[in-house]
Length: 155
Image 1 (tube, rainbow, N blue to C red):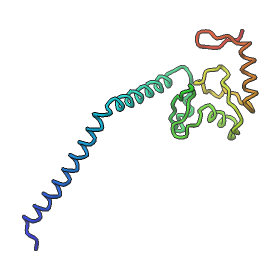
Image 2 (image 1 turned 135 degrees about the horizontal axis):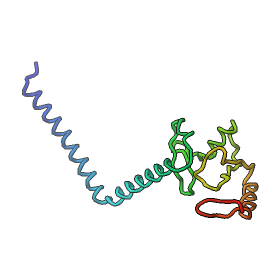
Image 3 (image 1 turned 90 degrees about the horizontal axis):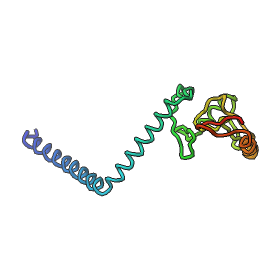
Image 4 (image 1 turned 180 degrees about the vertical axis):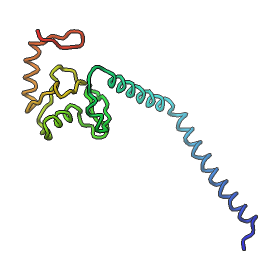
């Protein structure tokens, strides 16, 4: 039979080894944090700004809640388009696919009629069979629309 003091000594040793690992990993973390605190701060600021940007988008005048019911979260990419986090798919392409009931071909281009990249209502989206047709629409509409007060109006 094992004596009680031996068991107590064994657990003391195990605890002191585990505590040593905790102290070691905390001190390593603290050294990295001290060296790169500005990087942690920058990361935190980017996350907060992105959250503010998305929440301000969610509260804007466009009714884009139809994709939220599918449990999809979106962010605004560097070009100003809304994309899904999980797949990086453009929300405008997804909405158009749901509207048409088919998957868009890779050469097809989705056009925002009012030129607002965040307005992904199905009624505002139009599909062109290729980039050349889309460019031609922009050349035509540049002659027939004027820009005023963050919106486009017919001349």
